[in-house]
Amino acid sequence: GCAAFVALLRQLVSALNDGRMISVTGAWDTVQHASCGNLADELRKSACLRLRKLASGEVLPSGEKLPLADESLRTVFDREREQLRAQWDERAVGVELIKREYWRELEASVAREESGVRMQNARAGDRELKPLLDAWQAWLDSDGAAPWDASGAPICQQLASLMDSAPGPPLSRAARRAIEAAGQRLAETRAVLASSAGRPSPGDSDGGGAGAGATGGDEGASRAELEEAREAKRRALQAEQAVRAELETQSAQLLEMQAALEAAATEAEALLAREREAKALHREAAEREASMRAELDRARVASAVAESERSVQESINSDRLRRENTEEAAER
Image 1: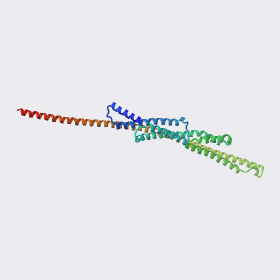
Image 2: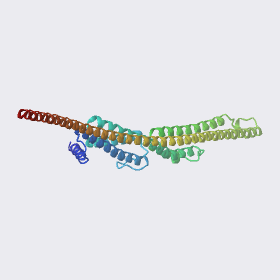
Image 3: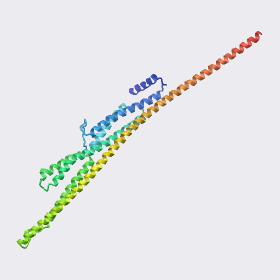
Image 4: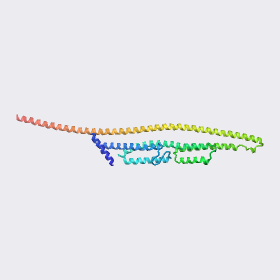
């Protein structure tokens, strides 16, 4: 409305001051692209700044802080986009086709930032869950010294509370790790119980000495089985450490990929900026061409007028010379 009209008047006044040919169509086209491009840059910077603050661990004015559940994070993204869209619809100037083009560029930039926030959200979830998973593993390895009500139950309650707000991928990894650790411990306990249940008691032997000897042998076998179970547990822990090392390697590779993605996003933004600059140069060239065409048309009209005046003057001169010759001949 008024803003578009004011921008158009400014463009026309600028053309007059620069001595260029006034073209309402070219001026309006320049106003549309310049207004939409500047507004898209402004909104892109503000939206990316808010999302980067969220990714760095800061608390948003609305109270959200990473890690967030997938649904909560999606709600944050939807709210940010609604605010962007409202500002865009209120302030964008131009026809719908041009506004749609710049809005799509703005959406693509925001989508790249949202991908980075999702990755940081997953890392934050892993960091929050790791201490509790380590505590859970330590409790399972305590060989029954720590009671369930005093140690195990509080850890489970904390895990359940944190899992309610954890993002999906870290939640699935944490649940798998906790279940695997509990399953390994349960399997070891069952193996020990089964070996103990299969040993004969001392009262079932035929003699005291023989019974004492059998008991000593059974205790030795039980210790050997327990040592074997502990060795199996150590091997399982070593395998888990190897998996964790592989996971850390993959995380490092993921960070490298993220850095490459951010570099590509920066390059894409630079390309978009160059494309907008090229469009602006193209519009200026089109305006200059239109101005030159108008000047050429004026020159052609002036040339035609001058040629017509010259022809008329030559005709007048020819008639006057003819009359003078005729008068001279009559006087003789």
